Length: 149
Image 1 (tube, one colour):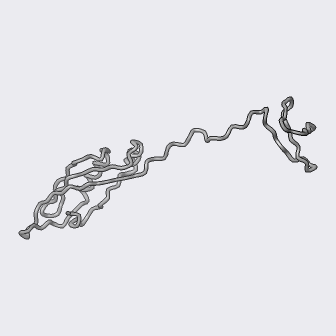
Image 2 (image 1 turned 120 degrees about the vertical axis):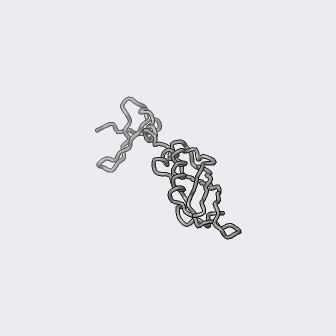
Image 3 (image 1 turned 90 degrees about the vertical axis):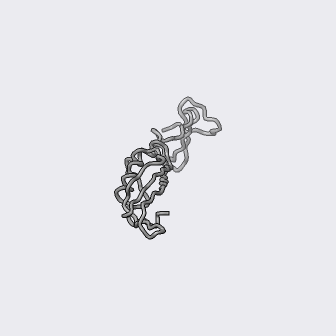
């Protein structure tokens, strides 16, 4: 309700980079915290108290400090036409993507087939394709083998 009376201060309070890392390391993707904000007759913040924590003390502290130091309001005028002291509850919802999983220590590569069944084909100078099989190993299904070289 008092949002329309705010004349200074950012609506969104973003955590610093260190706190963002702390949030990601804790596996928290979404934080919700509520605070009671009281405004004096002059529109200045008179008090801020935490109702529900975001679960990250550094972020809670930044929210409270930002409200106290940056938020300003036009005075709230009562039905009698005089400025009044008012309090309201403010809820902050912050969401961030979780950090991607760390890379695998070794990239996955397919294993080569066992040496006994490995066949290699190579082109020769004459343009023929010659199949080479390790010496002493049978070559299933191979019709001719040129072992010269």
